[in-house]
Image (cartoon, rainbow, N blue to C red):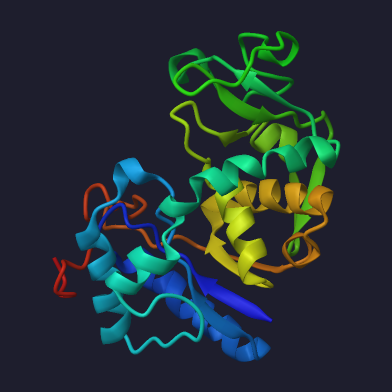
Length: 252
């Protein structure tokens, strides 16, 4: 059994991240599971080395220990970076068709999307047969109407929560749903702790995992916790560094 800490190096860690880390460690202890560190840096456009440095500083100051994963920034960049596995993630897309999961290239931009793409994107890309091409199209998984997915003790109507979700971005990088699933497959993750705002993401990954035969992710123990909010009741954000820890690990 295994649980993982999965920070994204797109900003300095904040109190919301730490709350998730502490709960993940507690879940691992109660289950007798190993604890891994997985740094989600697949989005190369947002990566900054100082954010990875911050992860190790804060985890060390908070007394975290893990048995799987990088030990420091050098080890991470040399041996664990997801940015080095983009080609592998792309090659695995063929697994979708092998598993009978319909997908299609979508040329709709963010401004074209007026909400959840239920029943397909607004441009009708489901039926166009457009080839997937970096810079002009993303790859969406087709989610049939009435698709219910159980994650933990929650039932999610996936077609209403996410609709046809993206697994490969138009900028030629893997989407979060895809890379997170493949990395949890790689690690052997059995316990997944996330904020409650990511319940739909958990459902999307469990949906794919079940179709692809990744049983330990499809049937993982999912725990979704309340978000840590700022004084105005807003979700803490790395972009604003709300209640964040700076590169030395002190409160900002």
